[in-house]
Length: 178
Image (tube, rainbow, N blue to C red; front, top):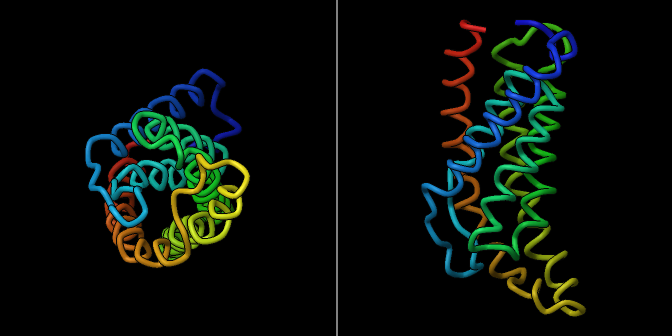
């Protein structure tokens, strides 16, 4: 697989567009509500993680920031800010972990584990601390609190683990073809 810097701009834009569309669709198609926070379980992280594993931090970060946040715009706009930051960071950091030297199984699994941690911890921080604080000044953000954020840890963990498993499978198949 060529380094992302060696690929031409059009190819890079196409990869970002394709994975962004897949992460948008993965977020939209399976939306299981989590009533306590107003959030929802989805599998959009699958494509954020796969993009990061295959193409590194720039693609992973852009896909994570754009696709799932765009899906939030359709029905869950209060979570756009959290999604943009959390999933953009998830994709970027995972890409950084696997970018250097050889992509070993340990490195790939470490990146997935870190991505899951960022997903769970990031949403917890937004829902337990940042949104309640912002909600004092902008009622639009007053959608959750620390107790509700705690209840969302398990669904977010499950979402991350399932997405990680599928992303690893996608990586395994596509890495051989690229």
